[in-house]
Image (cartoon, rainbow, N blue to C red; front, side, top):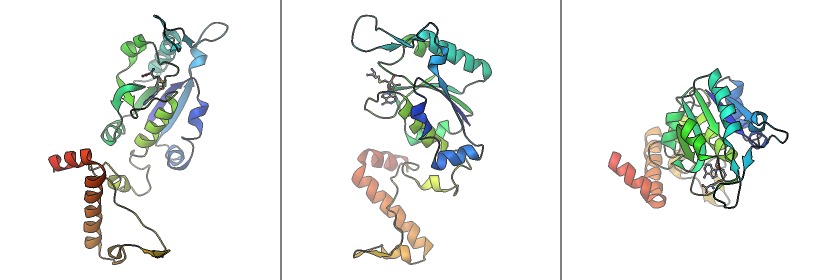
Length: 230
Ligand code: SAH
């Protein structure tokens, strides 16, 4: 799977995508992430990528021409399954959307900055607008990093234990159960006995029960969804 990301601050994407699982995915050749500096597509002495907002108002807007030039160049090289704009007014990224996007081959992601991109770029090129939550970031890079990580780890072969993503939170509209490691007793707190029993059936039942309890207590919205779909 390949991500092409358009950004005015590629540095912001370097660290999050070059360690741990993301690094392994790249090393295994399962994930490719290319970041394109938008300024390289701007013309004029100052290679300006933003300009004043028509109608007044504070804050700059990303100009259409450099974005269009960059998107068109990339589109001439490959067919994108989606052209994504990171934006607070997009659809909320959730596990279901991550699952769906993890099946794609080529995704193009546009990171906004300042007040965002000129609306006409969205009309002309964008096929999917994604928000990572109801808060405002300074730029789309962190949102893009969240997307690459959450989607990338779902590509078959990326996680060592292939089944492990299935037991993460949200995969079944449930939160994950609590987890424990050694020592079995730490500062007077003991690990639930069932986990030490070696009885797989009992353990599975207990874990499932914990998932249900946790979801009911912490996320009534998810719980409703789970109850209605099971
Ligand atoms: N004026 C815009 C916010 C601009 S923030 C508004 O109020 O909606 C600058 C850029 O950061 C945006 O263009 C977008 O690319 C990115 N961004 C900010 N918050 C985001 C979020 N919650 N999800 C995804 N991208 C976000």
